[in-house]
Picture 1 (tube, rainbow, N blue to C red):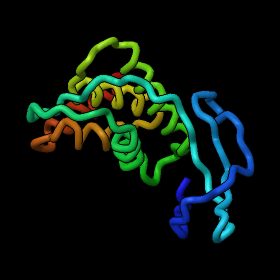
Picture 2: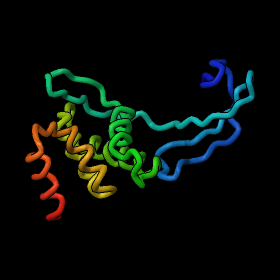
Picture 3: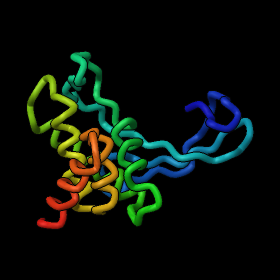
Picture 4: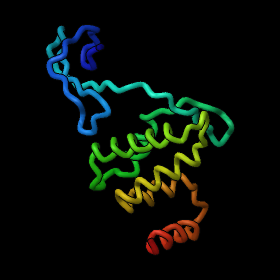
Length: 150
């Protein structure tokens, strides 16, 4: 595994254990060149459906894009990185269980909003405002009113 500090290709595993959810193996590594330590995660490569974009393009599912979007919505909110990882894990499980070969981004966005609604309402509104591309304040207010009704 390449060292993120000095790019040396050689490192050794110092500690290895399952992550909290049991879906991955967490490994502490030490670079053999600079002796700095870093963490890697090993997980099973699952067959996830292709993601159909709004413009018709198809892409492979990218966990880091999902996590990045959730992190932006949760910025300065009391949502831990572990919570965000669990949201991404649940989303991936749902994608696998769907049995679909292709899945639209609109459905993925809806699933993320459900996850955020349960985690933090402010993060939910932030994500919804970008995801749904509100044209004006009235559309935003409708979403807020729906949120207050729940």
